[in-house]
Image (cartoon, rainbow, N blue to C red):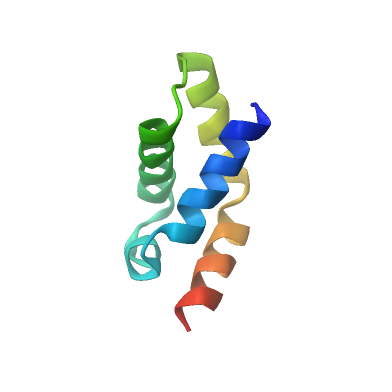
Length: 71
């Protein structure tokens, strides 16, 4: 995964509505973040799979960041 894609993922996390993200279950959150990232950056199938795995491995951190921002 390129640094550009990684930055874009975290940008999506930071700019998304916290309430929306907190309402999603894990699978839906991964899908939503991948979809939003793909709107900003062109990804091939391999990059999309890797991105999904990356997001899945960081769900706890993502939820912590979003929760702190929401409160």
